[in-house]
Amino acid sequence: MSDHSKPLLKILVLGDCGVGKTSLMNRYVNKHFTNMYKASIGTDFFSKEVVVNNRMITMHFWDTAGQERFQTLGVAFYRGTDCCVLVYDVTSPKSFKNLNLWRDEFLIQTSPRDPDSFPFVVLGNKADLDEQNVPTRVALHWCKMNNMPFYEISAKNGSNVEQAFEEIAKMGLEAVEEQQKVENDFEPAIVLEHDGPPQKICCCC
Image 1 (cartoon, helix red, strand yellow):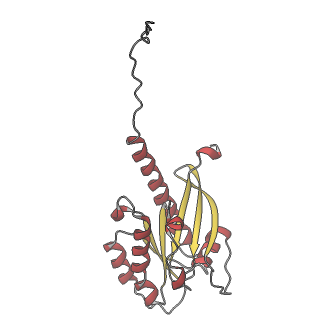
Image 2 (cartoon, helix red, strand yellow; image 1 turned 30 degrees about the vertical axis):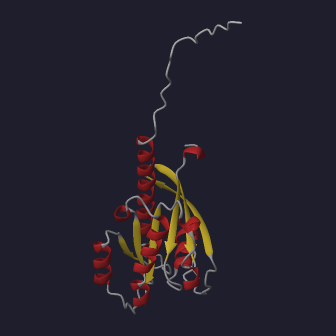
Image 3 (tube, rainbow, N blue to C red; image 1 turned 180 degrees about the vertical axis):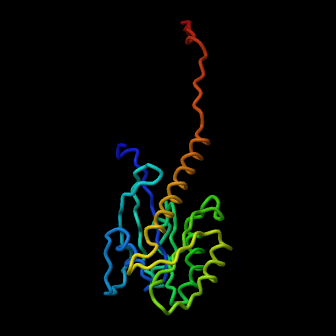
């Protein structure tokens, strides 16, 4: 398959500061984890090629800073997103509660054609820790009410990371294919009218 035909997916990763978004991206893309914490300033970018449904695709991950001053990042940043990943920290009820704000901000900025069917995936990070202050049943209920797949994961030990991103890739690819189908269905047909040979024009002096 040529690079020209390789689908490119834009995946936006949203969530509060400190939930482990950058560590999660490093775990998935680079198979690396560090305990050293450094807050993202603005946006981090990661890229990974994977095979989904026998198709090679490229995933571009946009990892946002979670600080409040970066929450309104502008339409250009959100534009063209194929799947949105909402990340919270299972030890932080506040980060889970704020998923509502991140989801709403995303929908406001992107104005998708069908907000109810736009692909979101929810990831509860730091599942390796004993201190789980967001019960799994509570997170499952919220995700069920919002029609979003849910995974408890650990960027530290890699638990469920591959499975979660397989789902993200599949949902993103389905969104791209659906958008292409819609564009093809609404592509206007070009009709060339044939009026016969041009008429001769006689000029009388």
